[in-house]
Length: 335
Image 1 (spheres, rainbow, N blue to C red):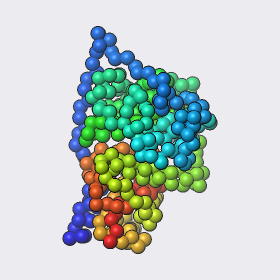
Image 2: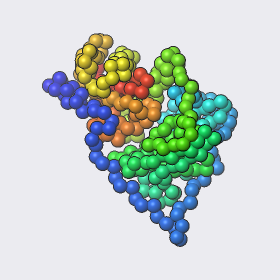
Image 3: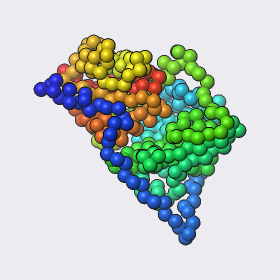
Image 4: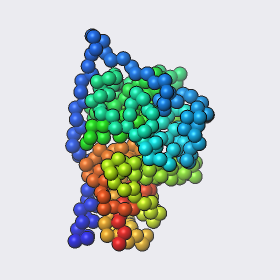
């Protein structure tokens, strides 16, 4: 019976883009007195920090709990001590260029974690395409219907807010804020451009492995944030499961496959067993070619089968492994 349940869980850990319930159609943008809704403004909070010196972030939030590298040139100042106040501030050359907000009590006005998608469409203009002009060229992002429903964009002054929507609740799960150049670097939507593409400097092997480790930590943080939001206890980090997950991510990267079944190392049971991880229940989520670990986690949240694994109340431990842009979560409950 144990193996049947493991097999069932294993089989539902499909790629994040596997078929899932279609996103709800977003409401039409209303008009007020014959005019389209006005672009919102932010004079305080995290949105107002974009473009400001890093000292302003420290003045507002204090010293970060840790500093993580990213693949895009900026460092993440991570404030993770209190889940309800969780935020990441991206700092490049002494300036705040991006932020990720996951805590419900973080001031991210005019938005809020938990805010209804319908409220956003009723109160501010949501962009179906985004045009950006930089000294390096002109860039136009075009959002698909699914993007528009699950990752809409709102411009606030000189900042762009990408809103990760939980399609199962119709509410904001996270907010990513970016300046224009960072938006173009990340390239989160289909892009048409003229000129050259801004890009971060290539990473050394050691730098890339440090970024991988940072992405793994952030996936772990965000998974527990999401579980807490649904009334579930946090998972415990397991280094052996993390090693198994990292090995699988590298295996997929190096051998150019995307599957829970490794041609060389076998299924999840065999891969955990090889590292002496004893379990009564186990499950796995994988993703590839995402902007970063947080976006991979937001994608799992919106896939019914991945979501069930992330929010399974019977799991107690989690190991996360990242290699370049391949991501693996190994959940389990010990014997």
